[in-house]
Amino acid sequence: MIKAKKFVFNPFQENTYLLYDETGQCIIVDPGCQDADECDELAGFVEENSLELVMLVNTHCHVDHILGNSFLFKKYKPKVAAHGDDLFLIDNAVDHALMFGFKMEEPPYPGIILKDNDDITFGNSGVKVLHVPGHSPGSIALYSEPDRFVITGDLIFSGGIGRTDLPGGDYQTIIESIKEKILSLPEDVRILPGHGDYTTVGEEKRSNPFLG
Image 1 (cartoon, one colour):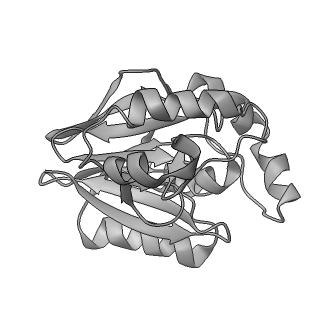
Image 2: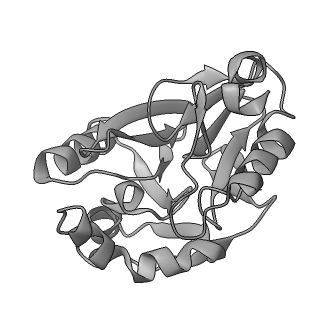
């Protein structure tokens, strides 16, 4: 059984998820920790629970979702995974951070290039990669069928969808991604978004104004 611990980091109130199971192995999804206090909070949870961090996974590579990649990579030496269509965002991350008033170290380049239907495994557990472009070309979601959740990054939120006016974004594409890859999941599956509170597939089918 996967346990999911959520942290809320940086001025964008970005959701970072730490997934772990009974083996103590874990992955961290979208580490957005910006300053020393936030980095210490995340590392403290890893160490207090005697976890082994085996991979960083980015649902997409916008700055607010990768601010902590360099810190965690230096401290724990995990593998780093992202979709290849978002590598251009990593190339420009330091400059983009400065535009928002952030200073960030050059993020590590992914050693694992993810694609649709890949499996990410840790301990006795795993999540399936769903390629869901629209917010960015390389956006992915991470689905656990046994544990009934999907981490969606900035694809879909409670009552909303991700913005599509950033480089590589496209409105029609994001709507297609949501309908084909997320709304096709069972209605009781929890959606764990990149910002804000969790929702469910069924709730968004019924009430999301963008998906009527």
